Image 1 (tube, rainbow over the protein chains, first blue to last red):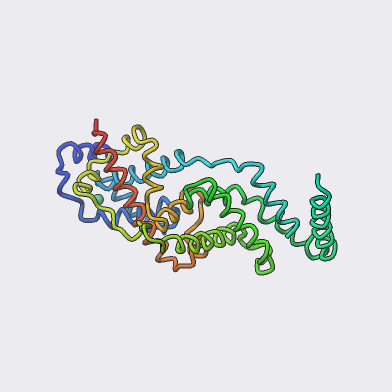
Image 2 (cartoon, helix red, strand yellow):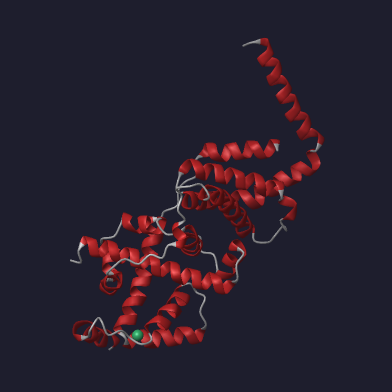
Length: 93
Length: 205
Ligand SMILES: [Zn+2]
């Protein structure tokens, strides 16, 4: 159901007319994805994004950016000589 | 090899050896603590250094400096507390000190102070779709993150790449937790705006 309502909004709604709760919702979405939100925050967000396509898209974009940041900034392996150099310096410090 | 050189090498060696045997008890303990508590975080620290300096040589120097500092001040580390956060704080402070020195040089601009908002950015943000981020934007993600001012870049790295909680970030950055929250929010908005600009330039289809 939520999916259909969001599709309606996305297809026929105006992009210029923004959801009045957008900023607040985005803040709470970010807290939720960071696992720093309260259960009440989560309940509000989940209920709201089910009905509001703009806020749902914001939520989806936030998730996509996080995934991409993690994927595209893979951990570099530390060169062995760097570790050895540090070990040597510490042992003689 | 010249006799003199060999003699110098011998004395260097001798000095190092006697130093380590003299203070061996306390030093051994320190080294063991370092090995056990700090070394497991070396790779994370190295990656943080890379993201701060954006340069492999500078990152190596920063990492080394951080480790030596950590070792020197190891007595002020409380065993069993959050070693990773403690080390990250030392690195952040080391970097900021260097960075301040450099940014006082003429010609260096602190981009963190410049609010990023191009003409048409807001519209680009509204047109941004999740599948563009998942599909088309590859290296742009890294470029966008690296181009944020260091304060904003740092909070995203600590949160998304290192998985620190806000409370730990507050400890590392030595700022109130409310500031962590608002800075992170702003950083995420700036990152999204940059990505939206990239997407707009590439065309939306
Ligand atoms: Zn909404």
